[in-house]
Image (cartoon, rainbow, N blue to C red; front, side):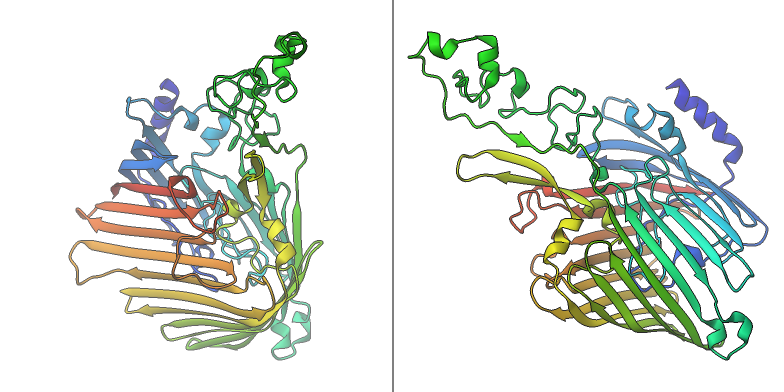
Length: 531
């Protein structure tokens, strides 16, 4: 507790800083990302925070949250100090017991934006797109924030030499599993050929060095904690009857009160050598079937690389219109192409339209907003033949084997109606044979209703991505994601804010999301203040 109080005292000089975290609900194709916003001139400082409750892993905590921030020219710095207090009045110790936890209190530190000569950002990265989005598209390292905090980073340079530039990205500086890189150039800039002089070509790469990295393994026994019954004991992991005794030292694996047959349970023979020979008539349990789990002694990586181009065709104050294309290859799998692609801005509308041609075993936007939860999932099977329960992990990569080639269109539209209603939508409509998983839908509506007193904002975001068909009958499915947010003004500097999100995991593979184990929810409700 003394460490926490000391840390808070160190923050006191920064109490003139502001901007609390808000969820990003941009849909693919949006040009309104955090990187399009310039820092204001001069210096801005302030402080915001929240007091309320938050649900993490089915446990309710009282929350005291302080979010100081400062912007000085192109430099930005923010902290996110979250004190979570359980029902016994104790601070959640998992947030303060390692040096990484103190690094995680840095919400962000940044310099410049992605079009500046030099720029970088470290901390929370709610929205990251590479090229035209065929590899990374609105990827977020904050999917389960604040329950899971990743300190990501990107850094880049833009030179005056033919528009040459480079960029590197990591989702978490502690792990460096999900990485990206980009190099780009204006190859014809010096020729002064109309249109072609503005041609930009980029080379992109994305990799997940360890797809199993989603799940912790605290004791290093190569059994993921998500199904390790003894996550702090490297010598034990199974407990078939859930009696608290590891299978390795349990005489009765299924808890029916009978000693197991030593040919099935080696521990019986270990404790009582020759027991089956000495007591041939003893009614050993021969029906016992212990659980089994898959261990992972090696990492499993996946890499995607590609090439893109962009040519501005019309660039005026009233109208912007360009042409672009991109090709990407999943190493060991298929290839996808965007060509032709067009984007534009006019009046209240931003729009994109592109033709897509995806080969067998290719998924677009592989690293998308949901990727942190889709890179691997728990697979639970109960064999009908003998009732054995088997636990293992399956990766997003495994779905590529069944993906068939497809052709189709992707469209995006955003409208800003008098700064009151913001509507964003995108739809991918692909056609092919077999399990090509070519349909995707993204939609969000944000209302800033000036005609309703005190209600500052109400937002709802929903998506289903890379599916065979958009399931409107069962909108809660493993390919879906939901976010909701509402803000109500209590005073000039204080808002009552509620946030809610759902991510789904079909543990028993029955095609339906049922029960709290298959719905991962994050709910926060409290008071935000700023001054």
